[in-house]
Length: 245
Ligand SMILES: NC(=O)c1ccc[n+]([C@@H]2O[C@H](COP(=O)([O-])OP(=O)(O)OC[C@H]3O[C@@H](n4cnc5c(N)ncnc54)[C@H](OP(=O)(O)O)[C@@H]3O)[C@@H](O)[C@H]2O)c1
Image 1 (cartoon, protein in one colour):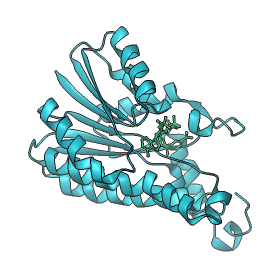
Image 2 (cartoon, helix red, strand yellow):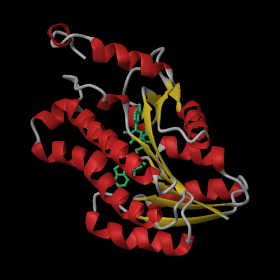
Image 3 (cartoon, helix red, strand yellow):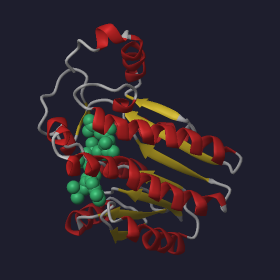
């Protein structure tokens, strides 16, 4: 059995990825905070022919519970073939600017809690000398913008953490993949108006699975976001500060 751990298994992107990689020799270890939603996701995967599914309930912001869950998963799995981390929170930026609790919750959900999981899992995976760690960050971390720098800074921190972890785990034969989606039509963005640059979770999942299989280090999803972000990063400060986005 191939053991695939999904942290944030109820997210739109995770569900689409799981559907693409399910097989009768795959055992999914699904972790999420909403157990009812999680059971629905698990039943759906089983009905599609997935080998085994084990569910774990965790609010990722309950940091003191991380060690127990991570060790529970590792004990059940034996070897972790793929760790996929895909959860997060996007409060409206204006609310975070005037509410320190909301700002910190945003940072904890998108960065601190992920660091905690990565430290625990990477310690265990080093001993395997094999495996894949794939984590969803965001293009929002590539440059600070007026309209979303709190969410963006958490993703920037995550991207930098993953880059260092990749260099360190290289000698252990472990792939560390940073995934940077652009605009994805998912529950997180349900309230936003959609345009030409938007893609479905299914399209995103296709690129993620391809990047895992090709042992990539960083993937922009869809790939045209690499070009968009390269241009955005080149805009001089005196122009960038006048832009309202
Ligand atoms: N959608 C986009 O345009 C976009 C773009 C770039 C990057 N991303 C990233 O993609 C990832 C997945 O997001 P998505 O687009 O698939 O949106 P989504 O369907 O809304 O997924 C967000 C998930 O995070 C979970 N979550 C949030 N805080 C949690 C906590 N403290 N404990 C446990 N679970 C928690 C939510 O659980 P509940 O269901 O229980 O609330 C939900 O399953 C996130 O990292 C997001 O930042 C998304």
